[in-house]
Image 1 (spheres, helix red, strand yellow):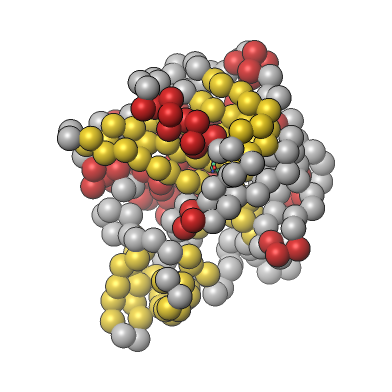
Image 2 (image 1 turned 90 degrees about the vertical axis):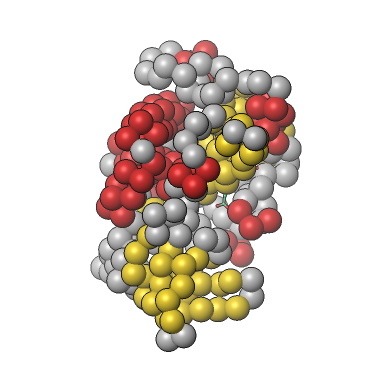
Length: 266
Ligand code: BTN
């Protein structure tokens, strides 16, 4: 089990991680965090598990991660920004995690719309945000983060698309140090984007997501669309030029057809 006393030692945060619940095995840290949030848990409360028996990904998928090799955790947020701005929160969280991982490892971690993190063009981490809306805006948002840290072998079906930090660093990483750095980055970036207005995340995200001008294909519920990325809309949508006209995506899976500079050709 993640040693929370060790994690808290030297954790340079004011709110994030002040309350950490660690489990050896749980169905999903997002499920547990949601229950805590519904019962009034404070912003910054963290739920972490060594193993998830029903880890969830975006678009109804499962999140599979070997026990005790990775980081799977959720953080409770209570944003006071207006709901249209909160649509930009996934990009802010992706920036925070990418910056934290870069700081901890010096590896070139990039963001891919909407909130995947890539290393050498392969998926390194995923983010699942689930929110509860109240009469005055968001009551809470649960941010679930899965980072492939020391896993070296992936199931056959994902092998060509998934990677871990250890595979690129060439050695296992200390998960506690990494977790601390990521939590610090999350608090720092969340506070600075929410105080400057979440729209300030767009330039930061674009620096880590060199996607403008790229040809992409997108899977929209079984229909494949090809287009060139023209921008990110003020509320976080991916703007595309396609042969059939311009469109903005708000969900879906994107494949970038030319992976430079996400994955430099050797
Ligand atoms: C995705 O890329 O599809 C998002 C993956 C999110 C996985 C994390 S692991 C911790 C948290 N608990 C879950 O059940 N899912 C998220």
